[in-house]
Image (cartoon, rainbow, N blue to C red; front, side, top):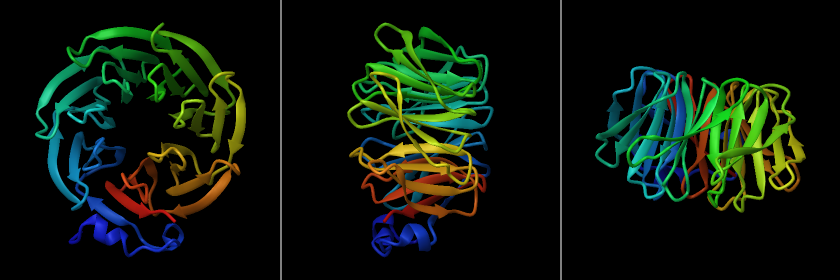
Length: 310
């Protein structure tokens, strides 16, 4: 922790994912369930079951702010496209918006009647989407915190929501093993994708929005054609239940993380794992570093790891 990450990462070789120990970011007192980078890549936000959010200066690996106010475990963090606002969601059934970089609370958003598992800003920053254990997906106006639309429901908890790159579609993943696609402008469901055998836990669009990838407790990554809704590839199985999924900024690399601590880099063209590393603790969330050379994962030992990629 004494050196900046830029210096530290330079020492890792192409075989690092399989061999070298990760750098640790310590500060939370409970499981870390969400991680996100600011658009400029300078800040890392982490969400924890210790009821707090921490902001880190990523270049120096130093904690710079702890955001307190949630009265339950924090599940998700998401920066606005301009980087001026951080949205967080919690077991306390609320969403909070924080001013960046000083971390002051802008507003608390109430409306869900269950854990708010996931939040995501639209690419233009005008909408905030949320998914909840109350089975619903909702749109909010981040400017005033008012609910814009209750889009509808899954048959069980909604674990993940993600906007397409053009902002026209929203995807959601639920404990009912369904992945759904929603028309943002029409504010309605347009497709329900069936294939996962157990809970679907995460979704992510590819760079051009033509494909949607999903993960689940069935230990597979599934690739869907957004236009037709058909499953085009099934990757895996992985060694453990999957919780985290992330695309690199250029959209060329995909990583996943799981309950058993496995971090996997996928070759999408070939439909198979390119590299995999088993960390010591369960990895509940994952994000690429801004330069795409490493991933940050959140773990049940209250620590975040920075693991270089080959």
